Length: 169
Image (cartoon, rainbow, N blue to C red; front, side, top):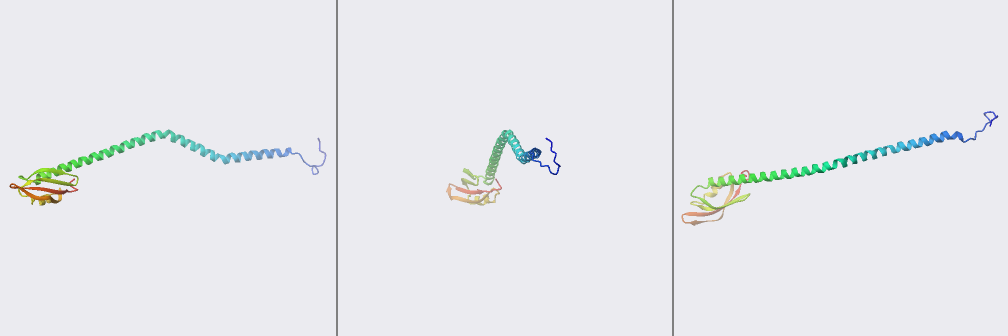
């Protein structure tokens, strides 16, 4: 087919000339769509990589937490044993102090050592002065007779309750 009309009078009605434009528009829309989803796809890949790393490290985390719990239990046991050792040391100090403070012929028939108090039962020739002797010691304070002094032969029976000093423990 030859078109003999001058170029200005010719009418182009062929739809073939739109094919490159449509093809480029489809390619452009496809590229814009891929570009729009690229961030979402990258984020999903990143989250998948993080989840895989978490799954890989989770057994180590559980093992570490178990070890930390065992360490904490051991630390609590050590502190408890240190507390017992300090209490034993304080109790021995109180016993030693009582042995030093109660001079013969005074003697004890019973001793109750508690964390905060000490109660002593015994005999002495002069029991009234024992309160002052105990209170002057750095180990005891607020000494008082738990029962009135009674006599047994030439000795006096006493029951004294005293508060143990904090810094002496």
